[in-house]
Amino acid sequence: MGRFIKFANVFCRSSVINFVFFYAVLSTLTTVIHSYLVSLSGALAVLNVVPCYALDGQWILLSLTHWLAAKYRTLRRVGGAIYRTVLVLGTLLVVANVTVGLWVLLAS
Image (cartoon, rainbow, N blue to C red; front, side, top):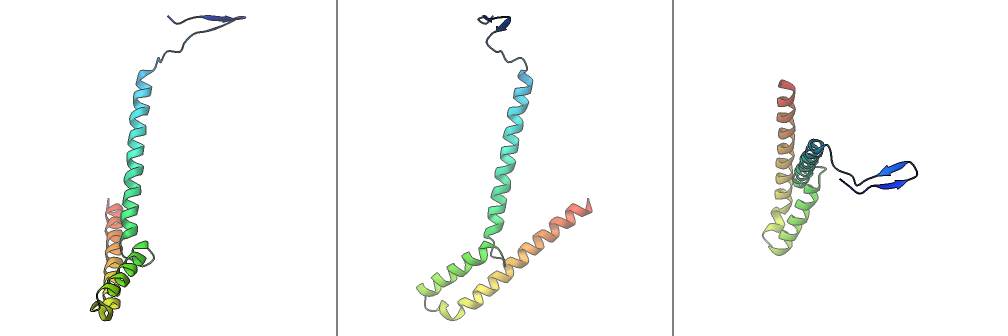
């Protein structure tokens, strides 16, 4: 038993966890929610890096093509064509991914 302290008509004692099951479920739930949040954040980061119009991958690809064109003279002439081709292919990849995802979601 814990130590009792008397204050007027109120007794206090050291607390004891009575609902161990509740704390085990809360701990597991917190871990699951954290893992879902980390997975969602990682997936959004990967999606954002894909070279697609209106995403950050577009600007990453532009910087990469400018850097490579400055380093290798042969890429100066075809750098714009490579940039546009990769950007269109990345956009088609994202559109196809979203379309298949919505199709699977709505088909079930």
